[in-house]
Image 1 (tube, rainbow, N blue to C red):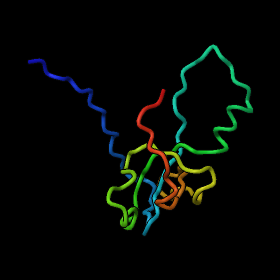
Image 2: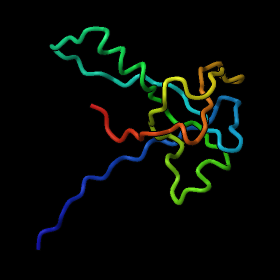
Image 3: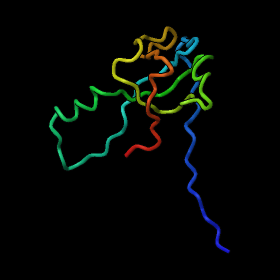
Image 4: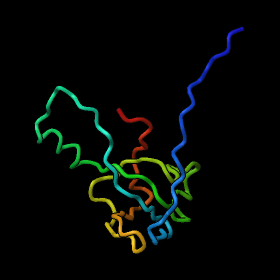
Length: 118
């Protein structure tokens, strides 16, 4: 009788790798981003806000090496996904073509996929 309407989650826009870097093997190329934060009347001390930054870094997956997650049945992420990595994972580098900051991490360093942000 009544149809159930499901809210479709928008797929992340496919990104084009303009960095000039191509990850090999189990490597994943990611770019840091800062989430948009809504203004709140509650002010947190800097020490509380800094704790979150000490633990993890939010990044967007730019390119994935051919061997990434090969031994797993389902890939942990795809190009365009927003994920979290540990703060000191991988190596920082600058893209030779576009001059932007990137990080090359191991496929196992991605531990959280961000599906929604407040």
